Image 1 (cartoon, rainbow, N blue to C red):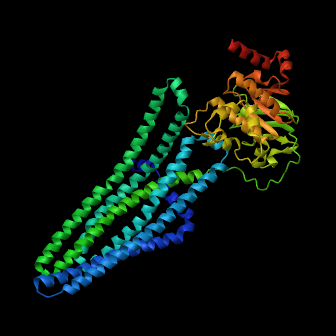
Image 2 (cartoon, rainbow, N blue to C red):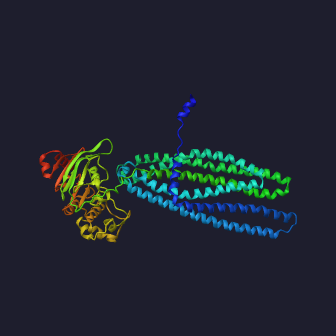
Image 3 (cartoon, one colour):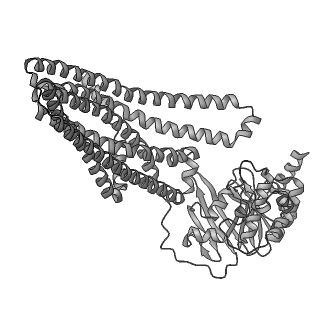
Length: 593
């Protein structure tokens, strides 16, 4: 009964690393030929090393004959020495070529892997990034791919060379003297048993270490991004506790993986010395009984040293392969994530875009619970539409649906009578300009940020003047060519103004402003409102705002609550109704007072 319980409790072996290695080898298929050539060179270098050692026996025989028997073998010793030197030089060249080819292969694989990861990011739905930490995603792209590139080269070449020397030295030993060879090989079998036992335990710790490293990176990225909020909230203690918890987990998995894998070296060292001592004893006895065996024993010592040293290299190569397998498992898990639907069959086009947008019975939810329950609206071309409502009403979700970041569960959204389900995501993005609450500027010049992915011929001074940031740019040392990096003194409000200017330059037929004025002061907000009035002329614009004072001049205000439109109309009309919008508007003034 107890045995049956043990069988039930036995966990299945973790085969993720083995599967990951299979995927990695399939991925590296274009480099198979180059890899085989590199490995052949590595094998050739190892065989040359063994041949050079085999020639040492002849040299020792010549020296013994010269010293003890008085036979002049000077020329023979010199001749053997020259041949050994030539072989060693050729071995160096061959080894160098093998290392050079393998470096090209591994870096090519790593480059292709990073390229695949980069393309994968663009194919993942927004829902994936909502569910996963940014730091963990970055860890898979940077740490894990780097681990693969760093360990792949060393693992394969070292393992092949070590196996060649290991098997080759064993063959040479048996050919030289089978008794001493049996003693050497027999003593090393103990090392293989220990190595197999350790390898079976360490893989799960390497996998856990990579996972927890991703969690740590996610935590650091999250709180570094919100460093100011953490300081203001005086939450150093809470953040520190979370960091200590993750750090402790990473320490534990890292310690265990390194401890178990670290046992290989002292065990291999012990086996190596044990084998060496055994050969010394057996060889010494044989040499005492037969002085002619001295040369055999001398060269055998070299063979044994080569033979046992390969255990170290094999153990280290296998350890690196475990790290590679753990990293590859995370990378290929990421590459295996579900992608956005293929839209190559979508051929619909919008001719002479006007900007007439219709929401017809739209329903959407992130799971079983609907966020947008039954949304319908008819937005005339050129209208300035404000979408307001309390937090969680579905305002931003509605914009994500409009941009086709998410697909509606029911209903449809039409632009000029064409359903966005019949348009590609690229087509939808092309007709929209967007300014988000979270400003996004990359490290580059102000000009490059304003003209991001655009080649329009515009007057930058006119645009930046419209949003009230031209004077600030002119005061910078290099004007529009000033590089925006960590050293640049640009406030959050100025960054927001730059993103607004970028949207004005794009001049798309449809415009989305999601809390676009959240990071600017009241004076700047007035300037932006004037600029936005000009920008939205003859453009259909959707404005999401918590500050209801900024959308008084909207053509229509859609008031949302719990995923539905509860009211719609102009600002003055909605205030006169004294309904939900009036309560929202008056509550803001009450809070301000």
